[in-house]
Length: 192
Ligand SMILES: Cc1cn([C@H]2C[C@H](O)[C@@H](COP(=O)(O)OP(=O)(O)OP(=O)(O)O)O2)c(=O)[nH]c1=O
Image 1 (cartoon, protein in one colour):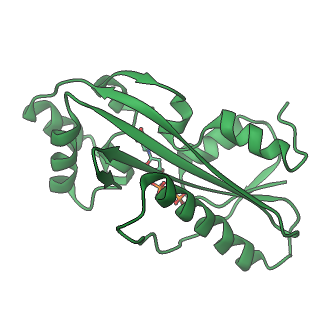
Image 2: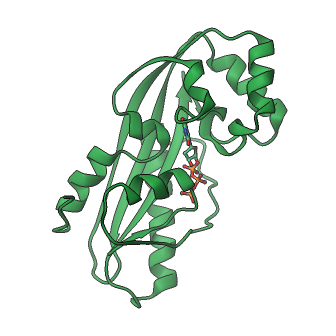
């Protein structure tokens, strides 16, 4: 059994595509982190925090592997999470347009009953097209940016903002299938 510690519909869809039995237990953890963390530290710490919180909640009542995940957008030295309001989304997209950034996603796999955990991350380079203020405003009006790291969704309308990527597409959406598959192998779970 896979136990997805996430409220993200995108992550649920990705997990469903693996055709393994799974259940969803959102973690609702505080996502505050120390500002001194590097992007890879940030996404692995948060992915582990989410999976650990669900392990505590379940308290041994279920067997399986708990999967926590976290995604951030990294532009230069700055880590961009989800926008707090439309103005914040505008500021993020204004900075991202016409440039390249990295998307980091961490995955934590924690055994729900035993003392085993594996935590890893991947990054993907995204080249974003040049956008006018008008285009950015119209995209924000679609409502899509608000719950997405970096204020865009490559799997949605945001696809039109992206010129190209280098690396794993699913890592940008929020959960690398290739990485998760490798990690699950360590728990004896084979993806068909
Ligand atoms: C860059 C990008 C991010 N995102 C999303 C993935 C994540 O859901 C979100 C980043 O926020 P996260 O904090 O990683 O996840 P979440 O709060 O949505 O869900 P949970 O903590 O319960 O697992 O941004 C996209 O859907 N598409 C994209 O192209």
